[in-house]
Length: 457
View 1 (cartoon, rainbow, N blue to C red):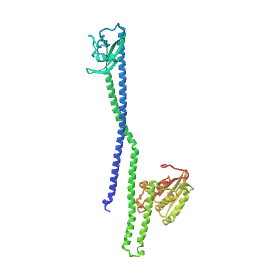
View 2 (cartoon, rainbow, N blue to C red; view 1 turned 90 degrees about the vertical axis):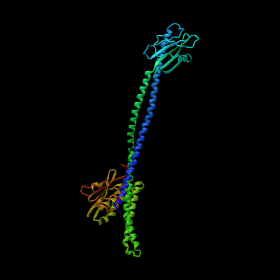
View 3 (cartoon, one colour; view 1 turned 120 degrees about the vertical axis):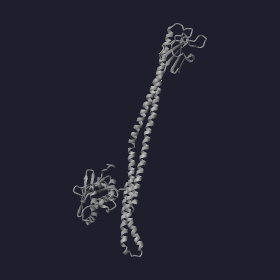
View 4 (cartoon, one colour; view 1 turned 30 degrees about the horizontal axis):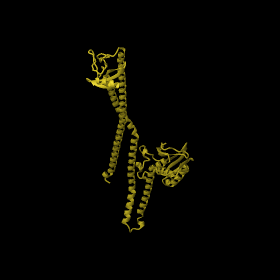
């Protein structure tokens, strides 16, 4: 195959991975932005409602206090009138304060048979004139309160009808609202400034918490990308493993077709090749199906109490003859330990580990299989006397389709992956380490019968 064609799948996978990462990054940024905006929007609504409530409350409080003060001034005028003699026959205007004060009061008395009028004394120094219309309304309804701007200044006018010796008169109080208005404007500026700062803070805090909240989602997306990457690698590796036996089968079939008249005894090698590769394909497909069921959680186990030492002895005995053919002796040192598991899958697990140890042991060599109990755990250990595993390869020993550089012709690289899947389905754990004196040590830890271990323990 040309080099360009061989590199194309790698470039395609890299492009797909980059596109997936970019898409996930855009998705996370949009979600983070929306969460921050929602946080800011909710804060803005709360701030607007709170600011409006504060504004109305303060304004009502200031208005009530000012009106109470105006009424107090009106009462002072009434006391002045009541201390005097009879009401004058002519209208009268008086001031409670002089120039520069913020509150002024006028007294209005109607002439008999005439419309109410107000007369301002010649020495009166108030900056605002009496309001005749308000006086007329007060004579009719008893009290009139209005706010008005006079010569650019805000005023509140309280006009109230009083009685003295059965005769009505009106007191009108002018109140400067400039200080009240400045207080409300200052409050508005404070609320707006504080609200903007709170809004910015809410957006920043919302973005921070959105970032924290997206951690599980980001991890989930990363896990999904890793799973997709594993699936792509799995499919690519499976295709590679299937290609070789299929090529041999196809070549053998083509050979048979080119010699249809040749006796079977003369084409026996082609038939042997077909039989061997079909057996290889069947084993490979069975292994792939087992791993696929393990990934999906559909790997059913027929659990029952069983003696792990007896199971190890049976599995080792089945491999003793092939091992001796390679000059390797398998010896088992079991202790009685009961586990709750599937005898077929656990025998398969032990067979995989022992076969792996035999293949990596020198000639002559010894493979030791031990079974021990460590409190609530059953510990299976398989030791070989081979060269061990390079430290850089240790993390990948249980990866699918992985083979060390020195064992490219030793199977499809699925055995130890299957062993790890079987151990995981039995709520156990598996590990590998190099022995100080040389060789590798595979250790399987399973819960003993009667103990249940939660996932991830």
